[in-house]
Length: 468
Image 1 (cartoon, rainbow, N blue to C red):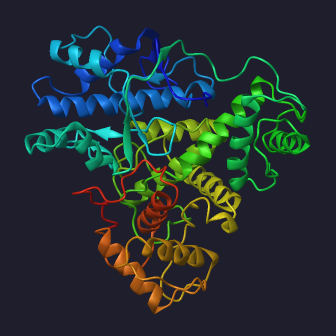
Image 2 (cartoon, helix red, strand yellow):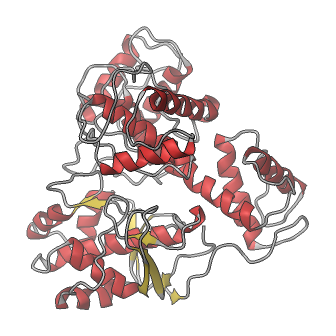
């Protein structure tokens, strides 16, 4: 991650295709990129307040990709793609609308972030008609603008009340976050502090990495031991020093473990995800097994950089096929894009390994992934205890969801609390905790406790998709 406050880059490099697609890269001035995307994503005839809200979201999305070095930390020579499955629509050489050009000239150096956060908001959005999501609805902004809402009010409607708009951010040349020199023991530098903070966050998921009590920028023996432990886990030379390879691996894993806490599992059935293979899954399939497949791929993709990200839709589209192929390539399977029994079994084992790697004792600090089994009345497990702790914490803000003792036993009181949560979240009130209910509970807990989840936890009109 780039150190210090975010800034507006002079230029941005766009890949004209999916991340692994053989396509050219184009580099252009950042304001020209925002004009192109805005002209490609929305209509110039929309109300000006609607257009302004969309520009803020587009700028913030692009800056988040640059600030987190989302693609560059994975070895790609670009900042963002032109494909809406992954990023924002960019059409090389397209016409730019005059009113949009003028507004972007005014707003390109403004962006959204959460209060008390530095990172530009990952301002997810969709058109709100053919595609819906938990972020900003582009067509929805038109309706809100016609109701008289100002751009900031529109953004709060979708992203929550704890956002702020940073005005007139500085513009300067983008440089890689690696400081250009190997970091070694006894060095004192802000880059060392960046690594210390990131290693402490990674240690929540990988407890073999010792915590660094004083993340003060001094490269002491504790930091050296943490670096060696990280290098051992991720098969890097155990030097205890931070060269370019170790720097970017730390950055990548840091981004991945944070991303895991933000995963949305929309529309997955409220029963145990079947570990037994049922039938081949291929392009154009549409069923609950596809939803489960996509959820598993999304979680695996948070830990394995080679597995392409995807959206959970329940439809086996081209994006799902490419993600499956990337998984098959990683695990040495035939790259057919079809999920047969062997791919299914390897997929399930990979997911189970990730669940096991996230210790339940750290659930207070990181939302743990869905355990793979429905929690319902009569269940006893650590995951029930975590569920109870999350519901009790949520009760402090939302009193209509009753607190429950963290006994680890799913009894009638826990079921009543789950039903109250499902009623509040507009989920089917079945009292059982499947993937969607689990994700909704842990996501709301994350929002209330940490405030870094990209989803608004109670945006007006926001409805979590049904689990059935």
